Length: 113
Length: 277
View 1 (tube, rainbow over the protein chains, first blue to last red):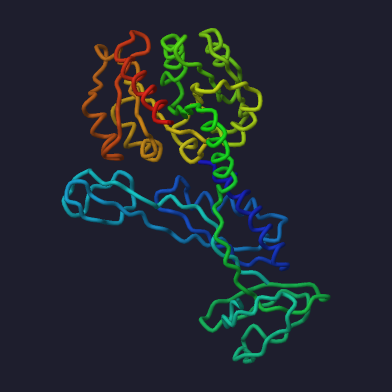
View 2: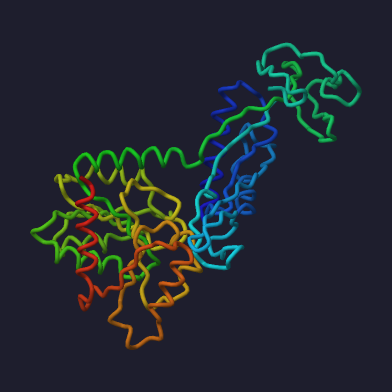
């Protein structure tokens, strides 16, 4: 979708945090991306390469941690983890999953020098 | 926290702290100031960095941050919702692909609600004010937002549009998002409910093809049902597909043109408006 604007926003957050911590270089930027968020990880990585240019994160690596989504089946009541919104229940096969979480999009950690 | 030893020292100006890292290959190795150099961590990870000669070498450290990337938008959306709730205005975010009939549904809604509920419309399109002109002709106060190259509305755009409007209390604000089944799904505008519109000409598989959008809908309106006699569209199959994504989602099948089942839509609207109390 709008990976470039998200990458620009991410780099702005990184700059804010890095300036608050008075560091000189950011070596790693770690984000947590829900498996059901509307973001394509490969596109975000590519956009990050453009957005980090001429910033304190110019040489930073982007690490993407994946966050799972949980579901309860309305048919068999069993909980499961899902990776797609179109999944069927892995236990009973019903397309009756009520999904929660999995849409996170957070900056979680910076490694700085 | 020091990323090497995890000792908790986070002062950037603090002295280098001696620890087991005073071994060859550690991050406390000597190196030429200013040059790019490597540090090999105990787990084998290689870190490369450089710093000016004027600055002492510092070990890298880890900052735990935890900030949502869309936090700015979400905070503005919460302020919008608060502002509109306090004037008892029901806000709906209408989303669909281009041409699904959002503006036509709004026009039909305006005609039916005339004299019953004051309706204001915010129109989002990349260019032109054609839609705002259409709904003004149908009797509503309207503001057009042109997003230029952007593919969705965001909460800050709505905040600016609200400043241009005089909202009477106890009304209805319809936000017609940019026609797009992808990007608008991620942006809270401050609405009370999200309505996704899909026309019968788009096919029964739309919910499966664009699950992120349909997963966030409070109501799905299937539009242009007056065309059903000319199509192979199966309403039941569409509903099954929508419920695969959201088992409890509410669906309405309407035609703004013929007026078929528009009363169901108006009933839903007034129920939502009443539930603001």
